[in-house]
Length: 406
Ligand code: PMP
Image 1 (cartoon, rainbow, N blue to C red):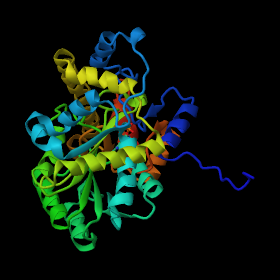
Image 2 (image 1 turned 135 degrees about the horizontal axis):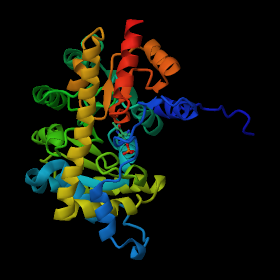
Image 3 (image 1 turned 30 degrees about the horizontal axis):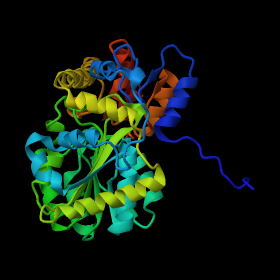
Image 4 (image 1 turned 180 degrees about the horizontal axis):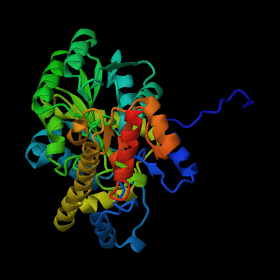
């Protein structure tokens, strides 16, 4: 009966990871990785998270169900983190929030919710985006057509802002949905400037588009929680703009496997707060049919970090350390390439932000990097800066130099 089931090969980063694991070379380097690594190439337990777990008295923690919408003790500080202490009290009555199975869960639930209640004709994704985005929308909202807007300009290795605006202006229909990466765009590492964000917000308002912010890197990108939430908070200054925030704590708290996240839907600030309550009840309804209730343990760890002043200060230091190591590795790679006189401009490596960098290497060059040098990255030329460390950055730079000259 199951003979017709096709084998689905691994895609994207998972395929690279499998190939890397199977490589026995001592020189091998994994630049496909989607998680932070320390300078020894190891996963890093954040000291703030370690301290939170100590304080939680783990042996006596029970394992009760959370309420259907999640733990309020987690959701409230999570929402405050997005909107900031100043804006949060003002906006909170208009926000429908629930705990989700990390950022992926939040993305899936908003897709399902929009399909059921708003029915936009199209969802606009950046032409380069996290490879799960199109998958999530097609799977959860098949009636909504997935479109893409220009994002990355191959020639200049920067944002194709003119293309982005012109395409949306021309082809987005009133009421369409659009996905924006709040900061540290995955995979390009390129974000709009503040002025560009302002223009995008005006366009979304004019077209009455429903904005879905994917916020997977707050604090992890720049080391500053407020800076990384600037785009979202700016959109919140438009009282008629309605938008969602898919919030993940995988990267900024290193809680990858615990699946900690939230979905916040901001209704018009001219609506009555009962609208937000109705929305939350419908989110809960959808979530119940999917996973019932989001996992509690990681959310409790996050709550402890977010609500204890002392641990929170430690967390700020952890964020600076992680983002600082990433920036230092960008600089080290850039310096090596410049020292080698590698043809082309490599400035984009230091100008991009967050975990990922679009190197500009072609798919063929990526193949050579893998076959000749045992360096693994996505076929698009995306590297995870977290895979770089003092011990391998020279080797990676020499390999890039080699393939570029070939
Ligand atoms: N959005 C983006 C842009 C991401 O890069 C990621 C992680 N790769 C996620 C969402 C979701 O991650 P998680 O489900 O672990 O929160």
